[in-house]
Image (tube, rainbow, N blue to C red; front, side):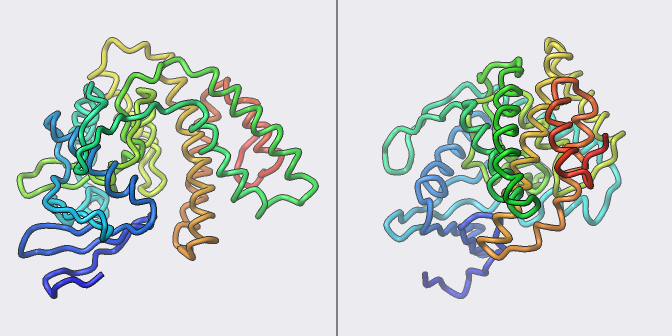
Length: 316
């Protein structure tokens, strides 16, 4: 792809996409010759739904689907993760603002919108099979690196049964707009000091607890247990009609499933894509998995299974 000198390469994420910033036009080129439907069409569709609901997301400026790119509005070059990395003061105040944005996302009722090819896109449900398949990324990528061949099939059989059982113990229905990768690396502060969302292409209609678990138990940005608890309580304060016990159960289960998925993804990124930097984040993912399992009886059987096979990471 040939671009003018005005475009500068932006450091990429964990996907197949490439990004180029034009500071003169205040725009970004998103290039994707793989998974085009998700990375270009669905990305723009979700952005349109968010914008329609007064949530800041990148507007489409131009597109050339045949040449594998879209041009979108540049929301800014500093994520909340980058801001926190420089200055950890007032973290809780920022997290309160993030929760306020999350509440707006969770109030979105639109599921259908026209994409830039003039076809309707319908946001799909976050079905149990999707959650299960995501958790199985752990057994597909991570487990073979750590267990003997004789143990792998036995572990995977028990693991799959536990995942199915845990999914049956979720209380909340799939009735909420879920970003699915809601954490400080995907939140940008714009020039008006407002929070905008990026990396929105994976959104589905799912469990109300999922995005909060993604935010609080974010593997990329370490936070203290006290801050995690304060942010969780602030969310409950702004959602007073929620059944706290049922919500906490779903939060714990989804946090564990998400971080098991992330461990699998990080190994895949290292093995398949040669992006080995993500491996250093795995111990913290284990730490959060262990922490959540210690707080929820429904996770006891999974805890025993993981502790017997990965005793280095799970406390008994």
